[in-house]
Image 1 (cartoon, rainbow, N blue to C red):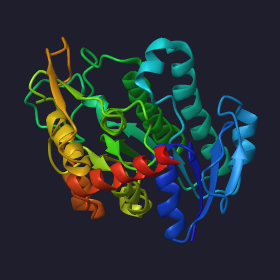
Image 2: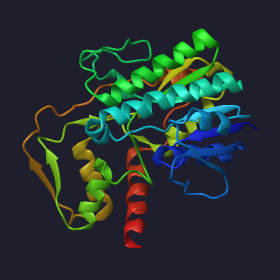
Image 3: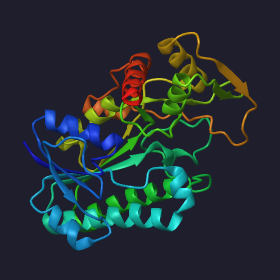
Image 4: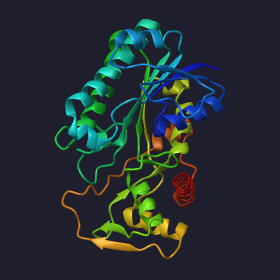
Length: 305
C-alpha cells in the first residue's frame, strides 16, 4: 500500500482514478480547491495549487502524486489564457518542486493526446514523435507540452521521477455536461434532434473512463518510471456512430439531423497505445457500445432526480 495524492480528484477523470486507487488498497488523499470529492471515505485537502507553501505542506509524507488538476475545458482556456497558463504550468511546477523537497517517489502527470495536434497528417503517432509547435493550436495544448517538459527538467536536474500519461478522449459517468456525448444524451431525452455536422465522419478514439483510470495503478510500477504513455481508445468512433448509439439506447424516436460541415472541424488523428499495452499490460476493456449504454443510463438517472 502506498500513500497517494490525486490533485483534481474531485473532477470527472480524477474521481474515477480515486476509485481504482482505493480499490487497489492505497491510502488516497484528494487535493482540490473549493470542490470536495464525491466520496467521503478518503482524505481531502482544500489547497490552491498557486500557493507553494500550501502545496508543500499538503504533499509531505506522500509516496506518489497523480497530478490531474488543471484548466481542462478548452473553451475556458481560450477565454482566460493567462489564468489557464498560470494554473496549468505553475501548478505543475509547484507539484514538482514539492516532490523534490519532500522526496516523493513519483509524480504522474496527466497530459493529453492533443500534444500531437501539430503532427503531419498520416504520420504514425506514438510516444517517440516530437512536438510540432506549428499547428499545436491551443493554449491548453501548450500548457500540457510545457508541463511535460518540466517533468523531464526536474528528472534530469533534480532526480525527481515522473510518469506522463497522455489521455485520449474519455467518456463515462460524471463527465462534464458541455461535452459531445452528454449534449447528445440530454437532447435525446428532451425530444430534440441530434445535429451532426457534415456526414458525421469526424472521429475520436473514445476510451471509457474506468479503463483510463485503471492505467494509473499500472503506472505505479517501476518500469513506468520516467516514461510516457498514450492512453487511447481501441478504435475510431465517429460522431455519427455516437448519435446512432444513443438512438439505439433510447429508441427510434430519437431523431438525427445533418448540418453543413463546420470550417476547421478536427477530424481526428490516430494515436498508438501499443507502448502501454506492451510495457504495462494496459489496454481498453470496455467496448464503446457497452460504455455508452452505461453512460446514458447514468445521465438519465441523474436528470430524473
